[in-house]
Amino acid sequence: MKSAVAGQNWLLRGARVVDPGRGLDDRLDIIVEGGRIAGIGRDLGKKRGKGLRIMELGGLVITPGLVDMHVHFREPGYEYKETIATGSAAAAAGGFTAVACMPNTNPVNDNRSVTEFILRKAGEADLVHVYPIAAITLGSQGNTLAEFWDLKEAGAVALSDDGKPVMDGAIMRRALEYAHSLGMPVVSHCEDLSLSAGGAMHEGLAATELGLPGIPGIAEEVMVARDLLLAEYTGAVLHICHVSSAGSVRLIRDAKSRGVKVTAETAPHYFTLTADCLRGYDVNAKVNPPLREQRDIEAVREGLRDGTIDVIASDHAPHAVTDKEVEFEYAASGMIGLETSLALSLRLVTDGFLSLPELVTRMSARPVAILGVPGGSLAPGAPADLTVIDLERRWTVSPEGIRSRSRNTPFLGWHLTGKAVLTMKGGAVTHSDLLRDHERPDQP
Ligand code: DOR
Ligand code: ZN
Image (cartoon, rainbow, N blue to C red; front, side):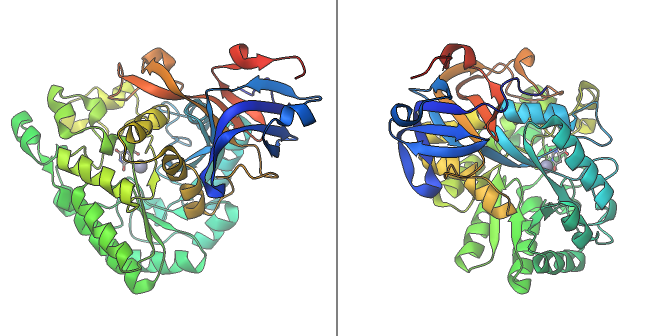
């Protein structure tokens, strides 16, 4: 679905413009011309109104386009769960202008033809920038390193075997060294498979009561510790995926204080839900790493507050009903997240853990810096990738409202506050809830 309003020049009037990288948090106008930010300032309409379509955005917030550095678009191979086009539509609806997609497709993105295929499909959908993350090892089997240089040349921005850990420490060491020499981050899914083996949910009281085998926090923490030590030893750049446990937050905080080049991300479910959500055997709350305990939620929030955790990423992991509606232990892990990520993250602002500019940084400029891709700024001359947010908009997560091809979210029926009401990529509107109300066809 291409936007009907591409190629327009716009005057976006009267929004609260939050661009933390430039210290901006003020009521301003933005002019978009030729797909770029042409001007930003007060009362621009009086000086520059001619030939521009006007959107009155009083009461709304404009931020640099949001960036989700951890999503699973299931193409090639699992198009029944999500395609690059449907995933891109979900991303735009969630306020995102860029995503990085994980390589656990079929075939795995471990060679340049898959990377090129993803980029071509993303270009055809043309709703968000899609940055492929390529596999560390061939087939993500953990045995043989992929051709990082070739993958980088084809357009991969980082390396990960996400979904699986790299169990062999020597291979992880070589991966860190090789990736570092190419300026690419290694994005690590931290899980010691010998400690998580057979587990279906977090090890704790809820698992005992449900009679389900548990995955302890240390299955994650042992690998976080190993990877931090390898990053310290090699001097390479490490990014830790989906931090879910208090112990992981503590290890990363300690490593950062020693100067280890590590960044980390968490997902909204890890600061919102505990293993108690599984009490009704809700397969949509089955995710890997698993939802943990209240003290883990608190540690993850504190990690976000003090900067130990750099980024919020959704780990959008679409699965079809047929993958989920089986015995709990056999159900696929993962939940969709692109369309709920912003609203759930805004609760951190309401609850006083992050200011709005800090949240915007964690969802835009920080992932951009980690991946080394464009974006994260509303500076004049930059591509007009931006998100318009209604902080007051109340909405309910419903199956009909979801753009993703899958519906596997434990947040169905939740009443949320705050929504991306318009997303613009390169000056083209890729999602809008508001054109009819706010657009004025006339001149100022
Ligand atoms: O829950 C998860 N789902 N965790 C992962 O690491 C992979 C993901 C998926 O691909 O479904
Ligand atoms: Zn993932």
